[in-house]
Length: 245
Image 1 (cartoon, rainbow, N blue to C red):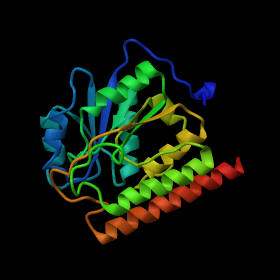
Image 2 (image 1 turned 90 degrees about the horizontal axis):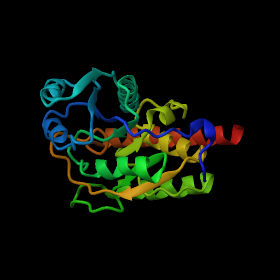
Image 3 (image 1 turned 90 degrees about the vertical axis):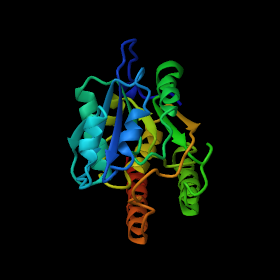
């Protein structure tokens, strides 16, 4: 389905690419994540830190990233990073996690999909790619399948994952009306992109076990329950919005 004219961005031969990495205590992995990014393609690396106490900002700066203090909340960090990318004249922003689980080599393909294929939103699917043993919990895989099926019923778009690894143009992102500042950010973006009728491509991406630290979502029962509650609340809120418009 073609994108509405108001949301259809213009391409440019001099596009700048920014990578936004939201972090919270990722000192063990952030340096290697930044070093592995394809610097021939990436012009700006932004670490949006949520209040790390383990030296993550210092390590990220030393590795060549711009570090911004984003405040608490995963979605808030992503939004702050995207705003910084836009202020830096980036025309493409790639989101990825700082725990070392995402494969930076996929950045090339994501950017190419936006530039050459002409899509508006590229999302990586861990369930379709090669997964290292124990890199994803069973309930994460199941949640992606179930939520993907529900989104298809609502908007006719099939997702297989809610991975953080994704690419979009800042101009497009800022017109979506994102509101979720915590763990529901990824899902809200996927739902709003689908509802807007934008051109979406899901690509398989490889996924590894995190290289350090503990997951804020799957690392504890409390974290899993909190994240699940926010994701469910976000789905309901956005789905109800659809019915009222």
